Image (cartoon, rainbow, N blue to C red; front, side, top):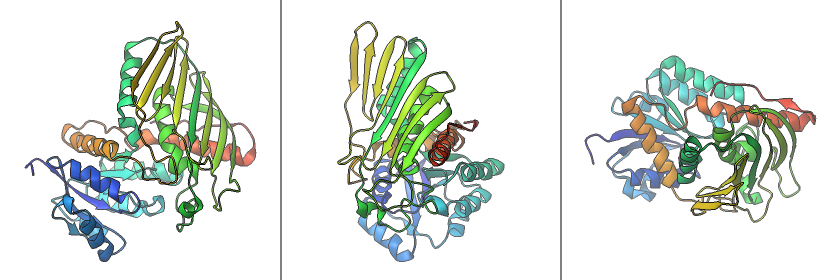
Length: 350
């Protein structure tokens, strides 16, 4: 283990726990897992027993114990959204930087509160919106910085995923009280957030949000929305966990000079002049019945980036504030879906 390795505590390790374990194992020499905190000491011991490759790590008894541990460089929080505020407040008061699983919180107002707590304490807050770290997304950023494709005219955001009823039978899943909503805030938030990195903010939405007969759940499992972006472009959003058996998500950006299709590992350029170019290859993303059917490479990249930013003072790949625009979009789509009216999206400083 490198002497310069960052020491981290992992708070929460439910369904996504094995992904973080794999990511941390692969970061040997850069980030070291010092300990975990779960619902009980027994669950912590069981988690560490399943992931022996993480090395020697302890089981913490409380968030306060983590906050008081001066050897820790930061904490990773993966609890459900409804359990965040007290954890973040305790860590921020102790000056502990925080890397947190998406979403920031259940609503835009609650997400702003989380960001304010960290900002007031001068504590870095990163959000695991790992699609921003994909090689295809990085390649697109580079291409857009180098080539003048003209104005963005139209956008398509598609997340045609599937979850079976067993997934939603878990206590609180797909509820407003625990998760803050359904398919948008739990699944499609990744793709919606990534799209906004290239399109800029949405100004107005007109949406349909429903729970289909394929699921018994409180929140939406199907969303269809028309979008008008602040830049003048128009677009569509489809977000679903009712699209059996689940297909790859996609962002399509139609500029004056080219159309671009972005999947998790694949980037395709089709020029107005007839040229075509494909970069990368499609990758698994948990679009089907197994929500964890994806590799840990992007989580590893986000954790490594956050650790490096603690040394450099740079902004992390996905800061808390940079995640607020997607929360504003989700909230506007929900409001439009309830009212049936065109709704303005709150402008937030990301």
